[in-house]
Image 1 (cartoon, rainbow, N blue to C red):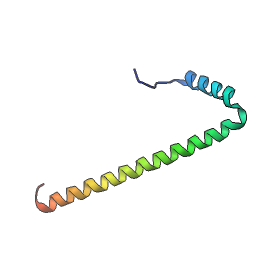
Image 2 (image 1 turned 180 degrees about the vertical axis):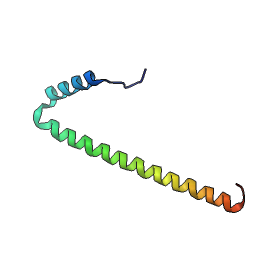
Image 3 (image 1 turned 180 degrees about the horizontal axis):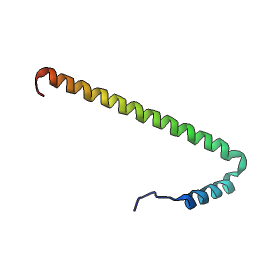
Image 4 (image 1 turned 60 degrees about the vertical axis):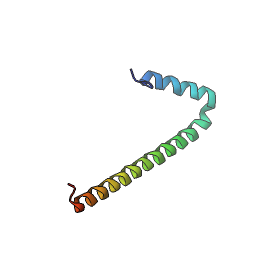
Length: 69
């Protein structure tokens, strides 16, 4: 079983609770903020992946030049 497994019913339940707690005026603002945070996180993860690949390729090239591979 996954730690944070949640189905459609659970998502609807969480949204209803959030609606009751924060009201209709603050929910769109909170959704926008969450979306921006997720977009920034994904961008940083992509940048980290690209940088890790560059480092790995450079290491591979240096080993190839030395005749290790």
